[in-house]
Amino acid sequence: MTAIDEKRRERPGWNADPVLVLTLVLLTGFLAQGPVRRLLATPVLQSWLTVFVAVVVQALPFLVVGVLLSAGLAVFVPPSFFARVLPKRPAFAVPVAGVAGAVLPGCECASVPVAGALVRGGVTPSAAVAFLLSAPAINPVVLTATAVAFPGQPRMVVARFAASLAASCVMGWLWQRLGRPDWLRPRPHAHGDGEGRAEAFWGSVRHDVLHAGGFLVGGATAAATLKAVVPSSWLYTAAADPVVAVLALAVLAVLLSICSEADAFVASSLTQFSLTARLAFLVVGPMIDLKLFGMQAATFGRGFALRFAPVTFAVATGTAVLTGAVLL
Image (cartoon, rainbow, N blue to C red):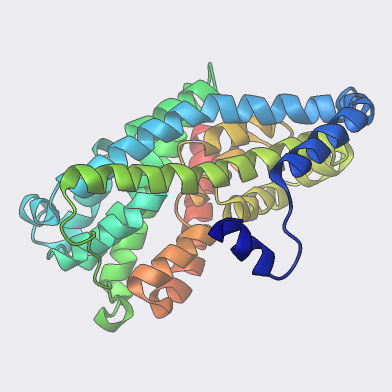
């Protein structure tokens, strides 16, 4: 008897034989194939699978591209670069930083640590706040995804850009006016010791793809469930009242926490709701949701997140409604 066998014998409890486990799994699958086929053949589940697969397949390429670009921005562009190019006066730095989000792609998962690095690098906090909110909402990848998700509706792309940029600038100016230095305390962040840029880049990509991919699956599941399981009369009742529709989709954006590169495909599937309500979903989601609240609390402190989240929600919802009334 080998030493390994002796150890197995001495180990308490039941040790499962892998071959036996595999055999039981295969046998269970064989016996259950009839009920599974009947379940998959039901109209409700077929509708659910259709919406789920459509959302995931359409959104996944944009999510991957966004993660690659945001990882490159975080790893290869030093924060001191932004401190040099932004205007020194905060009132002017806020809109410039907001517009910079349109040309420097980054999903919300990356925008929080990047904004923290900007503050540590000397960028005025009000400009960092504007960049934090605009980068995941109006960058080229997100706007392209929105155009693909809403074909033949270019006004939706323009409205998303305008409302998100306006909300970002308003929040930056509000911080400049009302913010206090002790509310914003970015914590030190560093890559692993001795880690090169290439390793940091691919490490960031792997982390963000797995992290954001999980939220994409969750969002696609929720969208498919709303379409296939929730009675359509309920959705039409909520969508019939403009105020309820906007608030419902704004709150849904917070709860689903979908990556900004993928949220347009979920919004486009909610056809019962008006374009303005869906615009609120697209503007609120990249600025404040459950995962962002946790990341902001971890990066800047809980005091910042508790003050920042409700104000951002109100400003993002308000700008979406005003922009929708003008453009949609």
